[in-house]
Length: 311
Image (tube, rainbow, N blue to C red; front, top):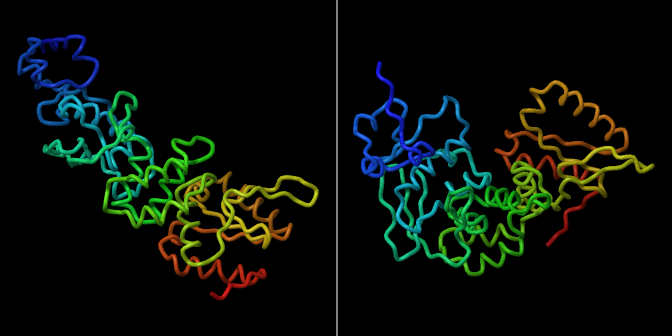
């Protein structure tokens, strides 16, 4: 078997357009080599090893498509969310089609595996992230309001404003929403803004908290640190009602599959209950039945002295 013709340096470092390669003297037979993939029409890229994670895959696809996108085009909506690691529902995590925006009145991109958008844009709505042109975190969150439910939008927003690694502040999101040119999702957006919290640690915690508030129950504290009467640290609760000593914990699958974690959880719960706390635990299945979930919490709140106010 004859050795493959090496690609010129500028073509060997990433995705490239077929026309660019032909202009560099690369023949069609070489462009059909098994070491090259065709992520989009008129584009070639090096084949990566099997089993790439979706994060790398979405970036690889975006870099490939960017070689043939119109001037000034950018990635938007759920594609931008995947690039920026903003949590979105599993149903929206498929890398195809890629969402590509252009500033109106420019015509939206029309291509296979591309969802094109012609969008009203403002200064600062587009940024460059690791070589990709993408809508800013704030603009991406605003655009997601047309697609996500209220609890999902709050979970995405909580991730953006998290106090340890904020990508944007709540105030910036409020200000951006005032001049947001989109129409779809505005009611969801207005409802989500006052529910954003900077101390939520995970999307599931955010969703649990929002379901509690929407049911008319008092809002719990996020990631509340619990100490005993001598000031010794006991635990940090996902959600808590400190005055009632009621703790709400979301248990992901790793709490079940990791034996050491499972043992720590048991000891932690026992110690909290030894100090008068009640620990309620929830899973994904509970989040699918908000009425049952919030009724359970309401019963325990009432059992520890909470009285629902009458409007």
